[in-house]
Amino acid sequence: MNEALDGSIRLDDGEYVLPFRAPFNTLADILETEAEDSNDVFVDYRPDYLELAPENALEKYQLEPELRGHNEITGTKILDKIHILNRGSEEVYSSFQVDELAEDRFVEELSRVDGVDESLAELLIDDYTNLRTVSWAATSDVEHLENTYDIDSHEFFKSLGDADVYRNEQSPDAGKLHVPDHRDDMQEDDLEEDEETDDSVQAGFDDF
Image 1 (cartoon, rainbow, N blue to C red):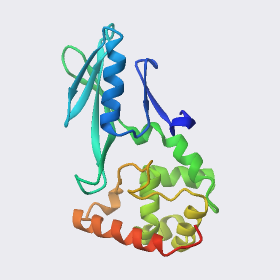
Image 2 (image 1 turned 90 degrees about the horizontal axis):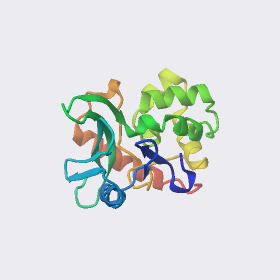
Image 3 (image 1 turned 30 degrees about the horizontal axis):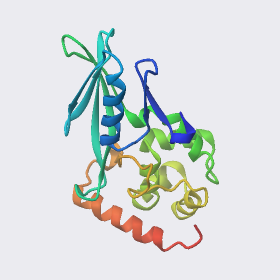
Image 4 (image 1 turned 120 degrees about the horizontal axis):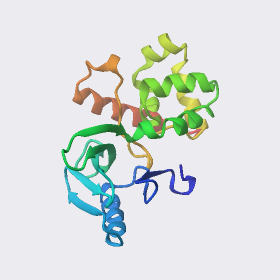
């Protein structure tokens, strides 16, 4: 991870270096510029995905976006998934959530929160995927946090802010909200309402 760029994703053995969670149009510009200096093939299939096929490789990459936020006008599309395909048959060999590639970093940051050791941080990231969803859980998945991890959600919320780990959809490095399996019953409207509630509650704290 490149700390100066808030993390980087390396494709094709590091020939392509993409800033972590950069806007999707920025990634397209980077890939297009880099491919111009080689015989690699870059194709822009926006809004669906970007595709990169390195010259001497039997595989190619498809980069899929996700809207960060709930509004097409105010939200930003960021890289969400990376698929590795056979260049000829189009068979998908593997797929990665970008957040999966940053798990170690999320655990490290969460371990800085008062009352959270590394083992608990690993469990939380495994459950909630990224820091934005952990932050959401502090106000919107309180029962699960308290019953499963014996966490005082109010103290946890405050500690996230004190450690500068709290993230919401307006945070520059926030990713997609990954609602955990036990909340699959939530409707999209409920998610939007919970996000709004989070922001108002967060704004009420003046100690961070």
